[in-house]
Image (tube, rainbow, N blue to C red):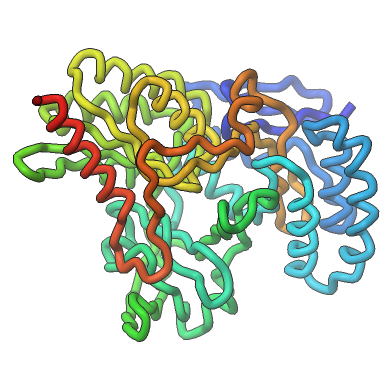
Length: 416
């Protein structure tokens, strides 16, 4: 029987499977985040003896969650792509074949990551700071633009805006830059719903020179210096009070549901800087995270609404996934207004396997009681539909603006 892989992301408990002959260990709260990160990146499920494609196929044939698909349809799919994989002459071509192969397997949390992207993902979940430029790239080809710009991070402070088209990195076309990492989005969900997400790799104190096109024909040069920064730092930096029409709106944005800390951050801000606001906007846009914190987050927001009676609005987009899919659904069930786009519909736990060739396979091996059947590949729709900003947005954020407007309307309605 294959050894159990690490199971993360939308899982309600976190276990690290030890090598054969050793006893599995629970990630203890007392362990330092750095120690937990080292443990999580020592992947117990390894297939490194064959080509990239053969290693991926072997992992899925033994572990993929849907037994019927695994036994009845997967073998033919493997045979279909094996010749194309064998003909690939570079690692990049092999990855592209694997991506195409995975796109025919009907599940979320299924994709090929670089080893570096996997480690930074784990670092973010555990709040372990690592060198970062503070943003990610969205899209492919000539339409690659800046997204996921972390509040208070290096890119934000340097003046990079959401929607800036990245023309060159250190003088080279972005797609040719040696810093450009492999995509980290789901293979099965279409690029329209889950566009390519990539990062520029950084070491401590690295500097990059970007040439960006802010609006058609309007170019800007921006220099960004990498520094140790995480999305939890950005969540803390995002907290602010927006004042409009004599009303105060509290705002907080968390890019990930971290393995620890988000419920406490919400409680601290609601008891501190956001104590006297008239309404609250919680931004769920961005990636997912650990389901272990979902219940505590829902309880914290429900308690706030019960005690204060103040309106709460949540912002979502097509990348609000995994634990955030569940949060959006639970918030909506409790009367929180959702503004933005439908969520990703990606609610099945992710496992990870080292498949060699500097690559890590993200794939599902188990289901979540209730939520997978309820939400997997079934996005939660918003109450107020608003399309997110894209290429050439120049920092304009229509979902944020609509969320604040909705909060103002709810406050006024409550005062009548």
